[in-house]
Image (cartoon, rainbow, N blue to C red; front, side, top):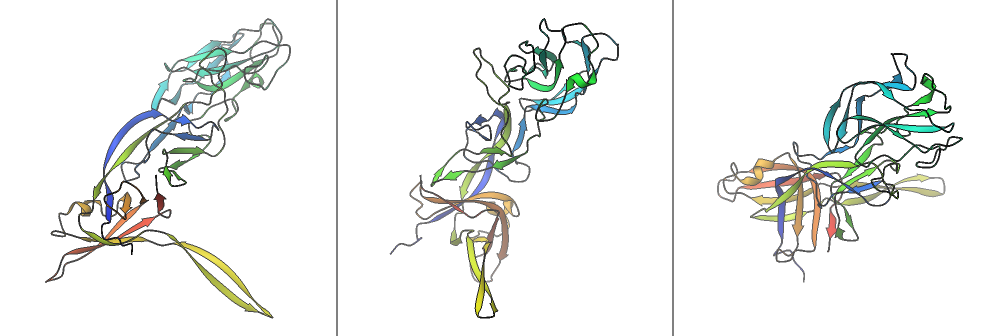
Length: 339
């Protein structure tokens, strides 16, 4: 008969800071991962995701000076490698005319926080294909595109408002577009993978650091805390948060209609305390933490992994052990990690 006599419960008792690092595109420009398995979500230790991109300002407009072949760029702030960077305004940014009739420029912020105009390949017509003749150019992987300027004549002239393009997601990279979801832990087929984020839509492959071109998405950075775990020294009666199902029915003429519903129960366990006041576990009451449950404390796997808010209700009996009835209010069911 299998029992949990040698089981153990662990809780997240510490957090190790990982300062802003580049996340790795998993090949679909949607899923970006870190080099760590778990991201803490304890209050004050939540992940901070900052893709490269414009934050405020940066409007590109017709030059106030009235000069030909130039544009003005308003002051802006942007995120570069996780750092909020302030960039001063640029007046009369030079946009040289093409020898051929058509060319597209990308107005960018470089990794040094400077405004730069990157010229595309000239052509006799426009193209929407990045890097093609008449199309917008690839920009460096650590730069940000904030606008495009499309020129369709070789003769020197004022650049007009219709030649300036600044649609978010097409001509302008914002740090907060598209939106994303955090994957603070990732388990597939029992194997724990790397934590990261998933964008709501794929990032365009508009960057390249090499020649010939190796097209990639913009850089995505995150700062997070990797959790450390401590055993609950004396524990029993662990119940993981799991999905349960129920049925309801309604009698109608000649038959019964049934409907299924699902709900997620609270996880729980009992902790046996020393004085019920200064025990380490109590410090984390009401915090959102990771928990692990091992059916066999001598093995590194398998175990159950979950993340939820710790609730504690203490009992101080006169002639028995001080205990805490602990609950785990999770957003997702516990996951089995087998390898």
